[in-house]
Image 1 (cartoon, rainbow, N blue to C red):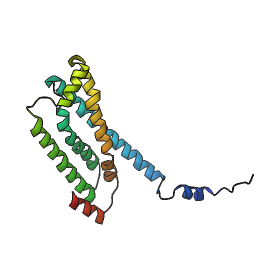
Image 2: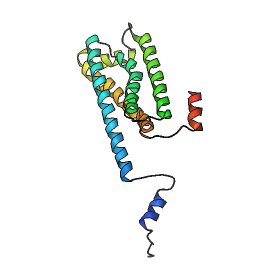
Image 3: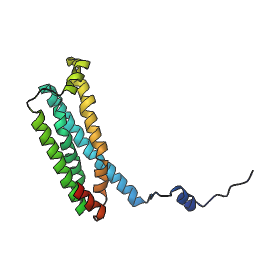
Length: 179
């Protein structure tokens, strides 16, 4: 059996790291910790908001109000991320404006469409399936916490944008025009 020559650590890491830039310095570790702490803060705020919204939905017996919160949830999370910056750059400012415009427009449209109407058919089917006496509790997990978790998951690119500073480039300007 032929003995394989081992590469020095730095060389083996370069072979493993083809096409991937990975910086594990202490400063980047601190940045990841700060990002995780910020993600936790935003997650806590979303958890509290969806819980309060759920309590309201139980009182009015209409789960459809969570749909109106969908866009607002992203505005809230992105605001937490954006406001954590001591000196936001132009890209972060533009993302803040675009997310706010999208989220508030979506919330306004869904409010206009849903307020004063019966509960959405999807939620009515869930209510029938679980029974009106049990659905109030199931809706917390099946609808409100699920949407809160999805908001947090989908907001990860917003966290990354607000955690790193960089100047706008041609691709950024193209994306703004397309938007």
